[in-house]
Image 1: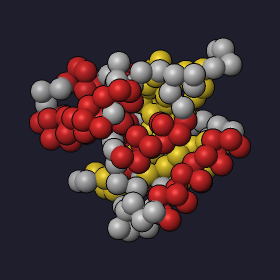
Image 2: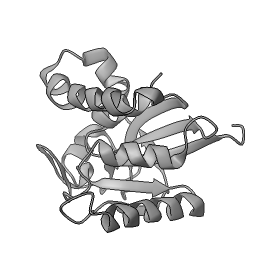
Image 3: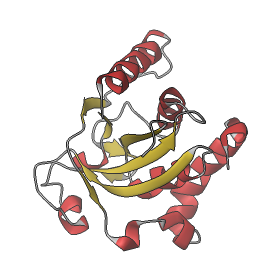
Length: 179
């Protein structure tokens, strides 16, 4: 990797949703769905769904910071999920659907904490933000059928109900950031 290519790790509910959003952004090179933040090595989707691994469904974003900044990624992260619901996004319930930022260095940690402080100070959300900000340890790629999920399954009801409106929101408010 060159010095401009960075990694961001986010969990904001179902990884099918977050993957589709971040894949659409200019400057984002790759987005991988997977599992992070837990205590079981090499977890599988079935184990994650049972909520016993401690892992969240997350995404690993590889991006060019000269094109899109970490702060811009944070902004889109907070705009596209509810960071005030503990272990829940819509009908998806369990610690695997928690809101979390897994920072890879002290700069990301400081930026994430400052961003949350700003959102709280400005009362952007009616309720308190419960997004976990923690040090990144390990990321396990999800099974192949979970990669590029929206791209391959956009006509499925879950995709039409949950993901399409988020993508529409991104197109409306961040059209200048889209590929």
